[in-house]
Image (cartoon, rainbow, N blue to C red; front, side):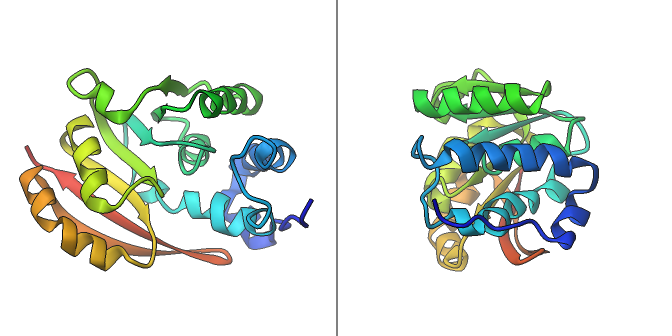
Length: 208
């Protein structure tokens, strides 16, 4: 097994009272993540900065109250970390693959998250059935595709909070007409500094 990144004092400070739960989640990933096909061996040395701390970047952009859906949760980024740090919100982790759903159920139980529901479904299957104050996503799809299957899940005046990569400007240019059609407005790109990493987020509001 590759050497695993050790959390720094700055990482501990950022997570504060939530550090022990995030560490427990990280330990589960170290122990089972590669075996379950959730995270590659090359990712283990940068588990904290690239994945766990990267996930914290969405937290300041979540609503003050209500329900949050994390679409395509996979290994649990960013949904599990966000749920740990915002125990006052109700999270629904939406994931279509059975083995990943089993993993997410295990994490929820092991880490003790009573504010999380795991749903085995594709986002499109929940259109007109569920609605949320915010929808989050990380490494799920390009912005135009992501908008199509998340917008119907967002309540009016709710938000889409998406962790994106370096191609964010090109994605937004390609998606601008789709975003407008879906009433996703006030599109903003945020660069968020976290210890040993920088995260890029796209935040939009749904106005109709």
